Image (cartoon, rainbow, N blue to C red; front, side, top):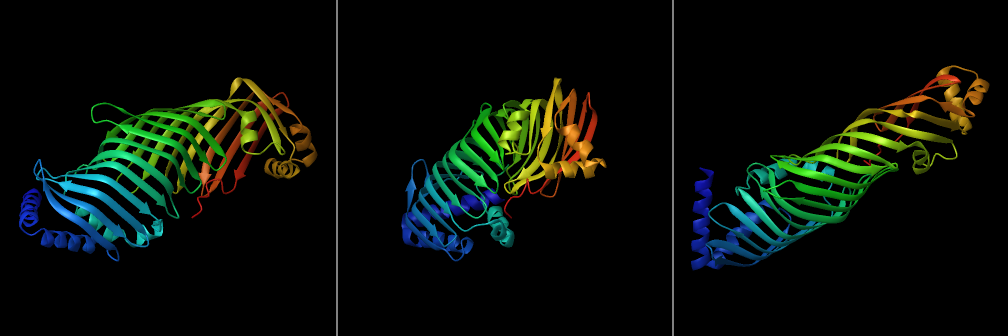
Length: 365
C-alpha cells in the first residue's frame, strides 16, 4: 500500500515538474517546512532526468541548530533516493534536544518511505555539546531494514565526552566483509593504538570481529557489536595479553605514588554509548614470572592500613618492596568509579586490598 502511494506521488510530481515546476517546487518546500520547523528552506529547481527520476537541485535548510546544503536529490519509482554532495553542519543539537524532540524525530523517520538512500560525497561537520567530528565519504543505507549496504567513510577525529578517536576509516561492502581502522583511541588516561577490525553489517547492527589493537605495550583481541538504530550503543568483550605494569603506572601518572613490574593478561567486558562506558567487568592476572610492587604514597599506605586492618608500620614494611609470585585484579564499575580488588601472593605473604578510583568514567554530563 505504501509503495503504491509513493509511486502515485512520484508520478504526480513528474507531471507537476513537467507542466508547472513552480507549483511542484512550492509543494516540496511546503512538505519540508512541515518537518523542519523554524528553518529557512530554499530549492533551486525541480527537473526530470533520465533514467526516469525527479531531481531537486541546490537545496538549503538552515536554522540556528543545523545547516544542510545539498547539490541535488533524485528519486525514482523503485523507491530509491540519491543525494549528491550533502554539506551538513550540526551546531546546537544535544542529548537534551533529542530527548525533548524525540517524538518529532521518530515521526520524521517513520515518514521516510524510501527503501534505500545513497549518499555521495558527504561532508558532515558536527560541533555539538556531545559530539565533535568531521566525516567525509559515501554510503548506501537500506532504510527498510535499517542496514548499511555499503560505506566508505573517514574522519580525522571524533570526540564524545571523555572518548576521543583519531584517524578513523570505515569501509563496508555489500559483497564481502568490510574493514575498520582507528589510529588512536583515548578514554580518560587510557590510550589504545592501531585498532583494526573486520566488519559485518547486519540489520540494525554492525559486528566487528576479530578486532585487534595495541594497549599498554600489550595486545587486545575480541569483538565489538554496535547498534545503529534508536541511538548509538555498543557491547564488547576483549582478551588482553602482555600488559606491562610499568607502562600502566607511567600512562596513568602514578609514578610518584607507586611503581610496578610484571605482565598482566585477562578479559574485559563492557557496554556503553556515545556518552561513555555504562558497564565494565573483568579480571587480570600476572604471568608465571610474577613481578614487583613498590608503594610510595603515604596517603595510599594509610588507606591500605585501614583496608587490611593492620598497623601502618606493618603495611609500610610490607610494601616498601613487595616481590610477588602471582597477582590477580578484579575490575568492576560503580557509577563513575572504577573498583579494583587486588590479591597478591609472595614470599612476604598474601596481600589483599580494594582500590576505588573516583570519576574514571566521568563523561561531562
